[in-house]
Picture 1 (tube, rainbow, N blue to C red):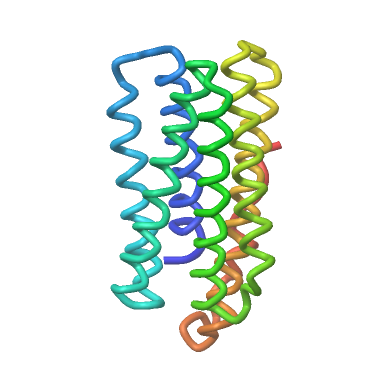
Picture 2: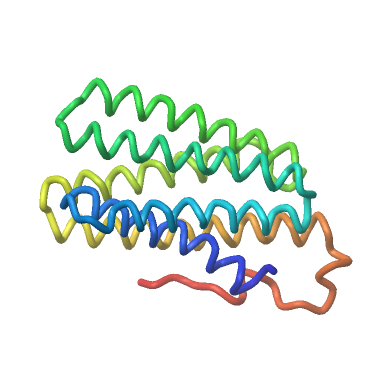
Amino acid sequence: MLGSAWTKLWTDHVVWTREYIIAATTRQPDATAALNRLMKNQDDIGNAVATYYGDAAGRQLTTLLKDHIAISGDIVKAAMANDNAGVKAGDDRWHQNAAQIADFLSKANPNWPRATPLDMMNKHLSTTTDELMARLHKDWDADVRAFDAVYDHILMMSDALADGIVKQYPDKFRGAVSPTATSGSNS
């Protein structure tokens, strides 16, 4: 599951987030389809995690990630309405959810001390917010730069999570190529 399949799950997360942001901020009819596909991606990630940590853990992560997406949708709607209080409230909830995801990951794997996934999640939120704001301000160059940052960060995050799984379950991966050797940056 690790390697390119694992990386695809996480890149799908940011690609379908971008598709949703673009469709929602331009009020396109495909926003719901993009959001539905993005939600399916959270199921896929949870199922992949269940392979190593069990079905209950997979379901727990899926729930946390679906909350992550639902909150991001609330932030998009508030930002589009110029509702700064709504954006702030959503951002606060988003960071609380990021802390819950970090707690889950650090309890599941001793190779992920809480600060590591928390820093990764906070960076993910920051780069995604930059992407949304650039899009809303119609600053297309900044939008492209922001998505490059989102994409590069998710590759790093995917590799860090994969490396933690490999370290926790080395017998499952003896002789396999390191996950970080199979991915790279798009810049």
